[in-house]
Image (cartoon, rainbow, N blue to C red; front, top):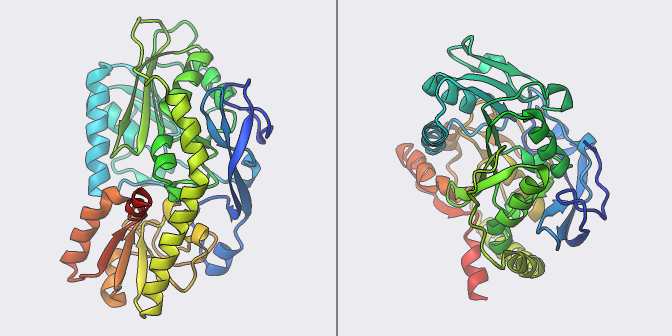
Length: 404
């Protein structure tokens, strides 16, 4: 798989060309790396985002992406598993996968397993045998330790791993990080050979990002952005048979189910979606300008009034929000419930990451929630600490866009 892209050719269909519609310069090339000092965070490597659109398959991707500038290792801290909201979703998703795909006493492969939480759910609850691949996996993060039926490989899933065929192949929040999408999905298909297998991928949903101008969801590690149309296309071209495309988690995640054998079932892809994508891409630059104006105006007002403002969510959305808006003193810091992120610093801007308990002393006047799905959970966390700041969500600017 190529580390760099050919800026002219779509990596998703390998026939169309990529037309640039959005550019962001000098952004951190990783948002989830743990950085121990402000100096290290501010000087962290940077790269460019030049989003292109393929009018043949509807794919959106960063034509300037260079995989050599990214890092996936033990200090990559991405898990959302400390959120009760996410925990409920994750377990419910695992239960549905076990039920839907009859995952009982079967071989399960997870590509991009992170810290391994989901694979353990599938194997413990379904009594399955599992193997997970992820360079950021850490064995010290499990209690109890994985049993003999589950093993993890702290490495990328590549051609050398294709002897790991399985009855069920799961890949969550990973394909958006892979530069050569068609090559990767094709490799995954070839690994299954003649075996009858079912496939489940989950990735960020591009329609929401484009139509809501969710600029906080545009960052360097995500070199790909899929809609149902483009995701279905790449799976078909790779030799899979897609059976269903859907959305999860407040329409933030796009999912696809597929098989290695043709069952005659087809996903419901809206007619005319490619034309819709073309329109959304054309409208994105103007919407982006309005989003930036909205947030700069709001943050300037808070800062001018002497209000102490923090963002809640120190991961990729938080990094993109801070760097896109060029924020410095307007924000007092970032908050995260993941204890493994607390005390570190945000790539690019150098803002420190605090835990919720630190807010008792800090007493923020305003909190900006980086993911609206956690707004109620965060409000409850603040309330139980006796804190009553004004709470905003990163999608607040959407109402302004709709009215303009």
